[in-house]
Image (cartoon, helix red, strand yellow):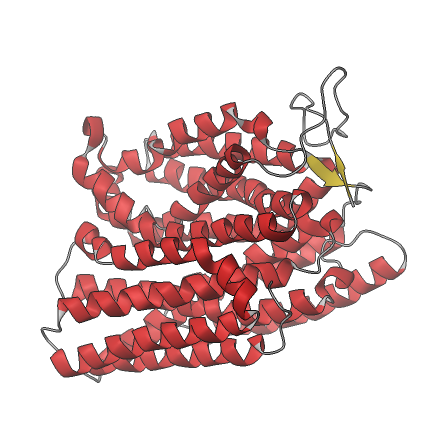
Length: 484
């Protein structure tokens, strides 16, 4: 059960929310406008993970940033984003999800403006770190709000839209970034990829009262030791993922994985002990013990890793071997984005008819697209058929739309609404980490193969790796609950 708040004025995050006098409680359910408002903030956070990629050359020329600084512009956002997601979910459970969403969106809007006004590369890196932290505050509240105020078909539709937003955001970020840089709006150049967030964020904030206000029944305590251990573990893993390609994977960097494993073991013991004593752990073992959550996350990790690897390796091939610029290479992904968005609208209905077999259907369609791409590249290189390439990309988008939103529903199916913030924080953290890891592993695998094999052979082997990820998802999904 969750409590519905009234519409209190925005206060500091340490205040306990109380309904304002004379204000009617928020209406039950989630209206269309409310869903658009919460998905807007989520879309901005996802798009900004990739929108900056095509502007890096312009940023370097303008702010004179070196490769290391430019890497931080990209990875710094993802670092603070991933680190803060679980904590953001817990704060939403404790102090009100709409309140934390509003604070996070306001902070994201302000930090986006700071990024666009950055006078130096150091300023931009700092603003990006803060922007990622703001995203971590708002994103967990989206799924938590959907989980808390919807049920049945309404929840299925809302989570389907959430999944569509996730997929579209990852794909369209680079397309939008290339378009904005090419248009050079008001002479802003690369700065427009950040400034565009400001009017969108302000518009969403003006409609924030349309979003139902929810929070957990009992305000959870703050788990300082668990937070420190979780943060240290995440930093070690992210350091390997982010710094490995640039540093050449030295042995000392790999040792951080051992540190992360030890930290994870200690974290599990600490969290179990705290919950057994009646405390409020950051990562509740009770929540993670739900079969849908545990098995669903096991399927989400290879799915997201394959998704990240597919997008990243495609960009390497399109820009490095086809000679396409950022806008053109992104535009070729349009069939993926369109197919994903359209099919995601019907995913709940298909799930109602097929049950858990929808995952198998998605894997078949996705695998067909990957096989078509592999055959097209292998037989047609160096001039593969554009029609077949676009068809393969579209089929991959259709399969992803059947799998992704369904996994979101399965993972959260048996999480109590009172713990929706924590559950969504864990889910999105796993998704973001797996996507980053997939991009790194896929990119490293491709580049290492390209050093000794032809481009076509390297691309086909990467696509074979993605097929292995798909089979893994299929095997795990056989034990997941019925999504309908």
